[in-house]
Image (cartoon, rainbow, N blue to C red):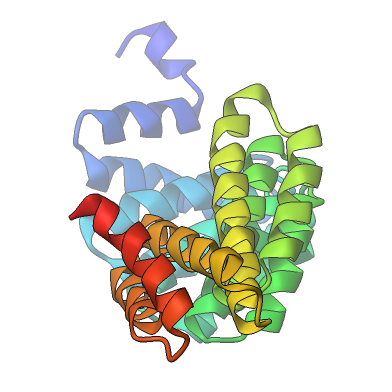
Amino acid sequence: MTSSELETPPLDTARRLAERGDLDGAAAILRELAADPDEPDRAQAAVGLAVVLEERGDLEAARAAARTALATGHPEYASQAACHLAQGFEREGRAEQARAAWQAVLGVGAAGYVPLAHLALARLAVRAHDLEEAERELRAAMAGGDGEIAAHAAQELADLLMEHGEPGAAAELLLDALEAAPGDEAPGLRVRLGIAHLELACAEFAETVEGGADAQTSALAIELLARTLPLRGRDDDAGRVWSYGLEHADETLAAEVRLRYQRDT
């Protein structure tokens, strides 16, 4: 062994061994470092050990190593360890354990990881059909200081609002998000904003029909509603709207709708 190899820091040696596929050798070095409470690199070594052990298929030992790193409270490596735990639990469908691990990320409080944790907690809340919690977590992710995550959270929250009949609130949210979004995130936000406007348009067309407008105005609203709904994947609803107009008891209105419908036939 050369003098340069002898002087190589143990973490670097472990990394090189892992890259060469010697997971056992890497684990042995990392395990020794992680077991020493006075080792300055203990947190980093424990995270590395968790990754290596998971690659070896030893999930429980990997989680024990991640918990060792988490217990150090190190802003970077404790956060990485909690994320490692959370992502593993999510892959296994263990929602409660995943939620606890993401909460641990928040407990560490490292600014670079907090928005990611809020976004993940929102994802879990959506799966659990807890929409109030999902909205809280998405708004927290938007306020976390990471432009990319904030834009992603805004899109997800806008989708939730539209799914629950609040396109106006979704549009306002997206307009606010566009003001602060990084340039490469703006197109996705604008697409969502366009969708929100489509939903608003559908609501206005429907209200016009239900409000008892004159035959010509109602026929126009029916046509616009029936032609807009398929853009939102609602072909069956569009068919029902056409049928409503074509079969309407008001013969003048039905005739107006028939003229508009026949333009495509």
